[in-house]
Amino acid sequence: MAELTPLDSTTLPAGIRARFVEDINGLRMHVLEAGFAPRGRPCVLLLHGFPELAYSWRKIMLPLAEAGFHAVAPDQRGYGRTSGWSADFDGDLHPFSILNAVRDALGLVSALGHRSVAAVVGHDFGASVAAWCALVRPDVFRSVALMSAPYAGPPALPFDTEAPPAAAAGPDIHAALAKLDRPRKHYQWYYSTRPANADMWHCPQGVHAFMRGYYHYKSADWEGNRPHPLRSWTAEELAKMPTYYIMDLDRNMAETVVPVMPSAAQIAACRWLPDSELAVYAGEYKRNGFQGGLNWYRSRTSGLSDSELQLFSGRTIDAPSMFVAGKSDWGTYQRPGNFERMQGAACTHMLGCHLIDGAGHWVQQEQPEQVSKLLLEFLRWQG
Image (cartoon, rainbow, N blue to C red; front, side, top):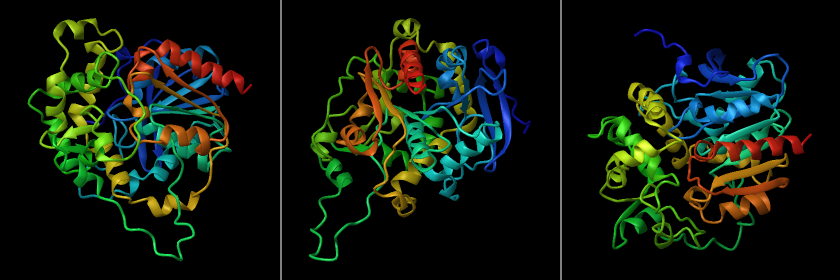
């Protein structure tokens, strides 16, 4: 197989370049950059989520560069043109642990010649990586902006449990979801199953159409996205969310998006993600499949890293922080209480939580001007 080349410049806005950075924690990392000259500009590191790419930041990078920053967006481990990772379902999941993702980010920053970054910005699963960057290396990641996925803090250590005996555990959430009158399942645990990759990669409608449906369903373009806080982590409450989060038990994700597929007229009217830009995503996922990204979910749902993460139990993010999401994004509320815990306990120096009109889950793509404005205000406030 011929070695991959960087993303073609014709697919990128003028002023953004694509290249590889070698030997980053075992990876050959594909990155997009803007504001790379002159050297010495303060760095902003941009971390994408699932099913996304460094390309997801294309609308944010130039405003950052124009404001004097070196904007850097990698294809994270498991994605796009970054290589050095395995998509083997039966392979080692440890490389996909959250702290190894922090090591990836730290290695990239160092390789680019930065002792620290002005901000680490993460969206979706990238928000979890960004939060842990700020938690464990605040000397390097001096501020953090989280998008679409609230951070509630490290897993707790059992406290004051020597006596009396702990109460019996409650019912299993997955069994409870499956027993609902309309049987359901949680998407993260579905994403952790062996068939999930092939369900999407080899779906009847094809990767491009699947991704169109998936992106549409989680955006503000789908009128059914009217999120609100949920009272508890119970099957009845979780089932209030759309089926891209709490799926029908008998449907895979490719089947889930079919009933909400936008019409040809809606696709033609989609300004934030025209078909030519969606084709960039589809091309990368057609080549790689989805398993690299799904391995992050598997690492989380397996509890593989919980004991390691408990080393940080009780530790807070004390660097300046900000949260941004679309008003039509259920991601803010998908873990009941996390949005509140982020603001009240997990982040001690939060400068703002912003829910943006006209955006769903893909906030930095759906409303890039507003997101860029908020990011630049956040960076300027810090001086």
